[in-house]
Amino acid sequence: MKHRFSYAIALGVAVWAGASCGSSSTAENLGSAEDGSAESGSASGPGSSTSSGSGSGVISASSSGGNSGSTSGSGASSDGGADSAPGADAQGDATVADSGSASNPPFVLGADITFTQEDVAGGATFVDNGVTLPILQLLKNHGFNYVRLRTFVDPTQPAPNPAGGTFAPYSPQGFGDLTHTVAFGQEIKAAGMGFLLDFHMSDYWADPGKQIKPAAWANDDLPTLTTALHDYTLNAIQQLVAAGARPDMVQVGNEITPGMELTPGTAFGPTSNWKQLAQLLNAGIGAVREVDPSRRAPRTSTTRSPTG
Image 1: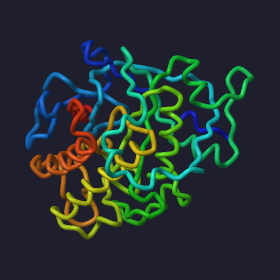
Image 2 (image 1 turned 30 degrees about the vertical axis):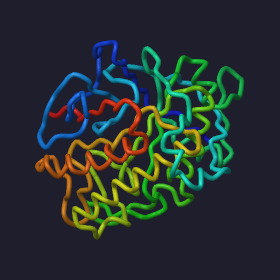
Image 3 (image 1 turned 120 degrees about the horizontal axis):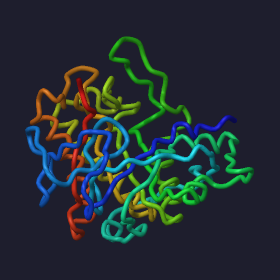
Image 4 (image 1 turned 45 degrees about the vertical axis):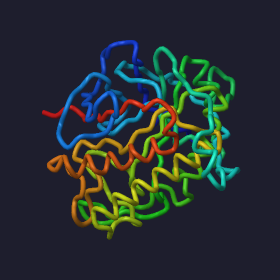
């Protein structure tokens, strides 16, 4: 099978000690440095975090800032299947377990390699200078220290296209769901790499052209959808922690330039209504922090693509 290493998105993040340097996207901090929660209005501040993509609420276990990075053109192989199920019960001690060593490098060079898990399950291999290697080892050999994984509520569901018609499911086999994310996250942490988790908060791709509500939330009113988003996020982080795959950064939403949870039906988090958008972002941010309130509050930010 032809590999999809071209889907790997380089992302560079300079951490707290350094100033932003050459970031390719505009970062806007929606919260204070103390609590990091989103506010109902556009704001800017010190402490922004930049990832690949046009915009998102980002929670970092360490710190943030911008820096540019690049990928190697070589491919790799991964054992990133979902053969083992995530922790069955993530309650109790799992909420404070130090599951997955924290990653706090002086700079971040990483890539989104979510697709490689499905590729490997289909028989793909990846080669670097004639040598077949697991993708995580290959990336580490080329200086990478972070991996981003995107995750979807239910990627087996078709999604209504705002322009008309229906999108085929992101993955009929369920790649990109929580079970697969946990399995891949375990590999990332076992490899000693940083793990950035990207919640699309949708069954399908979320980007500036579409922010589609998951099928399970499509008929909810705003309070019910806000609760569903919070509970989904909380459960996901609990399962990751219990499985030894604690994310080092969490991206709440993906490329939210127009907002989030916009179609079908009533748009609940458009950028024309900062109060509603902040309500949704705070639901996700709050859920991440509930998993381990004893830890230092992560820094949060949202990034949006330049316009004009």
